[in-house]
Each structure stands twice: as C-alpha cells, then as structure tokens.
Image 1 (cartoon, rainbow, N blue to C red):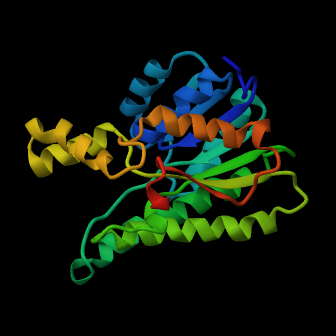
Image 2: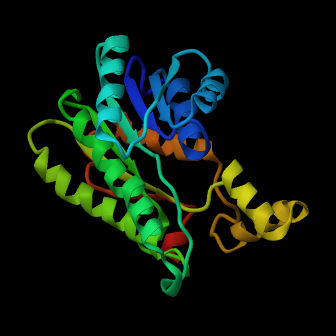
Length: 253
C-alpha cells in the first residue's frame, strides 16, 4: 500500500463510529497517527481497539470550545505536532417546515456549524505549512431531501465557511476542503431503517437506496476514508476550497 500519510498526526472528530471511524481506519492504514474524539469514553475505547495501533481517543464535545482546546493540547503533549484535522462530527434532525422546533434548530447548528468552527479555529495555530483541514459535508448541501432542511442548511453553511476560510488562511500553506458523502452504509443508517421499516427489511432498503445512484449502490465508510486520505495527502497539494462529492455521482444527475 502507498502510505500517503506516513508519520502525519491527524485529529478526527466523531471518530468512534460511522464515517468518522472509516476515515480513521484509512488514515492509520496509510501511516498516520490518529486521535479520534467523541462524546463517550466507552465508544472511543471500542473504536480504538478496532482501529488498532497508532490510534488514541479523547472525550470532547465539539460544541464546547474549551473541550476542543483541551483536546489539541493533549495531541501536542502526545505527539508534538498536528498535520491534519477532519471535522466529521455531525447530527441530523428530520422535520418538515411546519414541525421544526427551536431545540432542533439550535442542536443541529450547534453541532454541525458551531462544532466545525470550534474544531478548526483552535487547530490553526498548530497546523504547519502543508497542513490540511477536511470538513465533512453532505450532498444535502445542494440536494436536501424533504424534511431535512435543517441538516441541509447546516451543511450548506459549512461549505461557505470553507469558501471564506481559505481566504483567511492565505499565506499559511494550510489547505481546506469539503468532503461531501451521499448515502453511506453505516450502523446508524441501518438502525434508522430498522426502526422505520423493520429489521427484516434493512438489506432490501439499502439496495433500494443504491438503485438510483449511477454506481448502483451506496458507499462503504472506508471509501469516505480513502477520499479524505487523498485530500490530506500531497497528491492534492494544489487543491483547496473544493467540495468533493464522494457520492457515486448521485449529486450530478
């Protein structure tokens, strides 16, 4: 394997499950030392064991600036450097316009927008020239399904964060990009499908979700990891400010 991130140190928020876990696994496979953050020590311990050597975990809430500042201090103490940040932690609230609550709005934008700000802002002083930031977006930033205006709006917001931030960091040598998945075959997706349609219908529902995609399927979390590896590697050294849709072409048709 071409170890594109050999010796680099990366922080991945929301790394204990789903897309974040897939990204962490690929980063370690490509030679990086990875620190994942999440809300639960138990979930972190399970994920670290699954990922294996060169991975550790820190309990941190991305909506709390003090938590993220503390996390980066611990990364500096453990590794003495920081090369890449993946702002992956996020949530989704589903509700049509006439049913959206203030609590749903506040929680969605706290995690998905403010959480990205608090992940990136305290990292800037630690990232060297050549350092990278990847913000996990979504195809919902341009194609929000019915009832997902909060989620789509929050992902559109972070897309525009990055448009402005690449100008704010001009001259630093730090690159920032958005990686926007479509549907990904995660435990949380399967759990949601089981609740909505019954456990015996999950496999069929996943197949149906993929049928409208040009690839004929939905993604595996490790595929998001490989895309993130590319954006954090020297292979993408002149790419900054883009929104890379890793969605099997769904957003293009």
